[in-house]
Amino acid sequence: MQAVRNNSMYTYHTVTILDLPAELLLDIIARLPQQSVLHFTITCKTFYQISLPVLYDTVKLAAQGVCEFRSKIRRNDTCLSWVHELKLLRSDVRRSGLHLGSSCIFQDNAFLSAFPNLRSFDTLDYARMKGWSELISVLEALPSSVLHFRGRVCTSDDDVLQSLGRVYPSYQTLELILSPEGLAFDLISLDHNINNVPPSLSHVFPNLAHLSLTLIFLSGCITSFLRECHFPALETFQLVNRDAIMPDFMLDMAHADALLVFFANHARTLRDLQLPAWAIEPEVGNRFSGTPLTLRNMRSGLSLLHYLAKSDAFSSTLLTLSVSQSAELRVFGVPALPVAFMCFSSVHTLELAVNHDPTGPVLGLAFSFDIDAIPTAFPALECLEIRVHETISVKTVIAYLGAYHPRALLRCKALTRLVFIFRGFRRETRDAFSVRSHETANGEGNITLERIQ
Image (cartoon, rainbow, N blue to C red):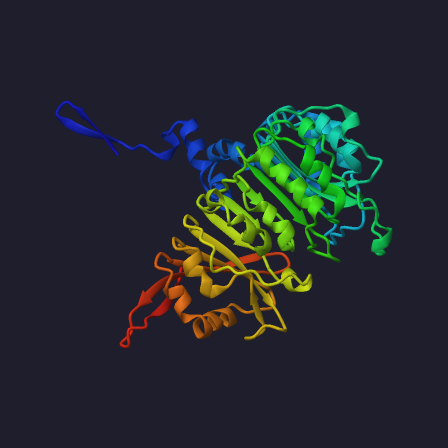
């Protein structure tokens, strides 16, 4: 309400939300959840018109949606300029990684170039592109405003990226899943360069800040890339292995030397790192002891972490750490690694994995890090996240921690949150608890978990 004095009398004028400037309303709507925006849109015609740019900011399209947008493209609809993020979805829910689905949109330049202000283009849930050449043709068709690209590429040995001679300096994020053209179940017949990552990737995308590579068969196909690539602005690097037959492998000397060269080339800018859970023999692992990395976040296996932790610079800068399953040590015959000497003084968030282990001493559970060593290794730990295998109940893990490691969590003086992450086939759920310690009559103390809504 607004009061205005007129001839010694007060006249009240009602000010409604419709009186606010459209720019201010648009800024408010942009901060709302998508469902709230939809509710706001159907309130009246005015709000509908104001909300349209927000509704079209992020667009996810399956087959029917693509047809509808093609009609908008023919009309040169205004909404095309509002789209900033575009994600293509497969119409067939039977998502097979072995079958190359229809990629008609990848050849439709009119569709790819129809969004003048597009910033992010995501095709990870769509079809695979047929080699680096089709990837380049898609990038050529996209508007110059695109900064982030995510997609799947079917590669082969004769598909050479450097011969295409293209450079895309505007791209900041590149996330690729690389897979072979066909699947052979006889590993002996597989060429070790079946999905080779070309070193020229850093020449084609010279200003990348975030690079994620997921490989179906991770073997000798990355050594030349790690040795020769150089991204001057790289902050995040993720190397993921999706080999269903051999998910992790022994890191040999050739791969270790290539990885050390990569670390040296990117030590100044690299802050977030994710690597496979390699098994590493002492002769190879000791080469990582003096690695000049100053990371904020890292996700890897216990083997590599064991040797990197010997560097004071590495141990004192980490803020979040994710330790994946360390069962590979037993599979490859590598002796168990001592973790008691490790000390990450700055880590405030730790993520562990817990899986089924029939040979485990208690309840068949296997943690990726020694629970009793956590208080010493992570004195500033505030949040402990435990990623639970989908066949294990959270209650079992809680009972295990309370029965066999009651003092470990109690000794974590800064610990205030315990989060359990359990995954289904298509969803991920988090159960978060606040952690409180209490002194008992005998002076031992205990831990109370209170669910966080």
